Image: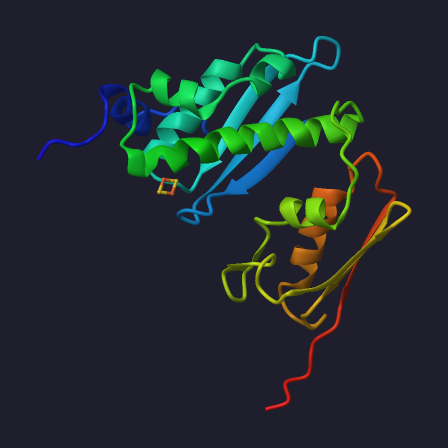
Length: 216
Ligand code: FES
């Protein structure tokens, strides 16, 4: 049986480059694919003067196509400035690996999205992001879309876990429909704060819990 993958995809899947973690990364992001639920994390080290990516690593829980495209995207951006890296599209990445079957395109999108999110994370931490969209409820929902509730395996956005989001004068208050006693309550809270606290217009992020009583 012949595989629907290019030689390059197979080669990179078997011997991916830049796999692993960077300790104390300057930028880091985990993205999940809405199409398949797989996740990938990208870590960056950035030179503060030149804004060049001096090191980049990834950890993928995705498929062969994701591993191959994440591997090539890390090779493509090493040594590039953040602005150059931002221009890389999933189409270029797919070309670089010699093409992917249509059903696997989303795996390359996931790799590029994780890189772009790690760049945004760095820029927000350093306060150098160019597009200063206001942090409103929509943006918060977008930011939190890949935070997963380990109790159910579902994303907290779109399920009934987020009870209320309130933003006023840079203070975000989020109420989760969950008991504070829940074993994952604290880690979900920390993940939410981490994803929002570096926003340019955010001063404070508060997450509280309010379990709805089951009336049954
Ligand atoms: Fe999930 Fe490829 S099928 S990343």
